[in-house]
Length: 364
Image (tube, rainbow, N blue to C red; front, side):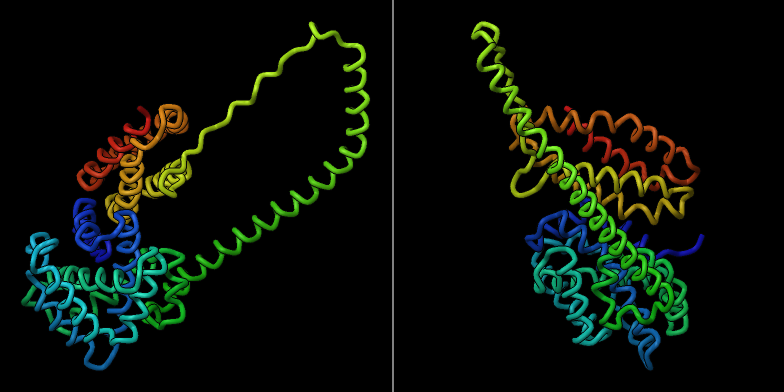
């Protein structure tokens, strides 16, 4: 089966691992998940460029050899006394490979995309660098780890890297040169992002035009309706008896589902939409691996919502449950369909089980 470095790295970065990284760096878990989803393909794109430079492939070999054992001890370093050393060493690796300018540009793009500061995104990149290099070293093995093998490996990953780049993040990197080594694959990703933006703008414009036309029609109706209503009101006033007047019930107000600045209703519906899209694209084990990062991201988003439920009133909880309950039967069918695909259950069942548990909390 063909190697996919992005998927291998994201499999290592489990939801629990991402939560520990976020806690160690003092960051929001969802923001950290978003940042990692952009940083991993961003780092690999930069390393593809390094491999094409004179002497760059050998630099990659040396860095990978230094990090061949990094994956085994990484979990023990997070939050421990060696964390600062790990970040510093990772930052030095990136500085040596990418150069200060590209390292800063990548950290700035990750920070802007995920809502992190430059310093926080820089620390995150320093923490991820040993994982990325360790994965490359692990795939090649110490005996076959040479400049030609590393160059060949990274060259084979260009399409996977471009496919993993989030649309908005690809645009942020568009002028940095970090995506140049991906060639046409990167242009396709950036063009897709631009097309999405254009479609969104066109849709917004169409809605605005429709609203203007509707407003014009409404004004024409109001021109005739207001005098008629005035006449009807006068007739009721003079001819209706007090005993015949009916008290109109007040219109119930739908409670707000915003907590701590987060619109929980929108977050849940957006997350379920992303979940359906990711599940719908799974046809075999390879596409399941590619979808795993998105499923983990949705899990982290729903987990964040679950953590805020205690701040909702009983009425708000009821509204939220009423939103989620109708969505669950088709979603559970989609879960079952995906897990029935050969080779998928062993890859995705833990994540899907976690998702089901997180969503069940919302329906209570």
